[in-house]
Amino acid sequence: MKLIDRDGRLFGRISVIDLLVIAVVAVIAAAVYVKNNATPTGSDGVKEVPIVFQVRTTGTESYVADALRVGDKIYDPNYSSGGGPVGEITEIQVLSDPGTAVYENMPDGTLPRIEVAGTVDLLVTVKGTGVSDGRSYSINRVYELGVNSSRTYRTNRAIFNGTVIEIMD
Image (cartoon, rainbow, N blue to C red; front, side, top):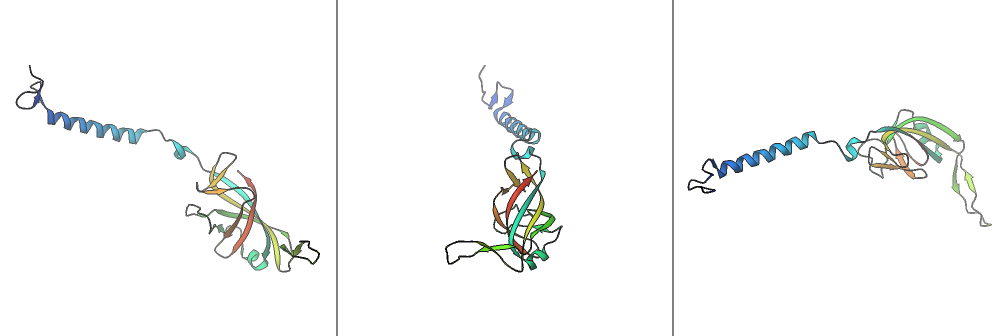
């Protein structure tokens, strides 16, 4: 008995073309099954947690401090935060009034920090959502947050510069 007969049938029973169609359908069915039933890996299995951090501002003009409100969403215009806010302001504390703002070059060569009238130093507490492994923090999965990082933040009413002094998760 021949493997393929004169009519193109395998062992005289099934067409080679029919066999190829069955194989393609089986591969497609297996691919759909694997895609729908695969266990999540990578960042899909990571759970987002609340991350609270504090930003210290120095020498912030009083009108900017007055424009900040608890409940305001804050954004970082210089670094991508995944299209959403970095977080929401939960507390604003005035650390000193007037705030210290500038270093002044003195004739004797020293650089004392000078208090400037009309400014305040603030401690702004912000609550965001992100992922953390206890050593690194990422808001919205893309905005890297670190202690001692100086950033520019904005709300819908104000723009201010600050340094992240503490991160609590």
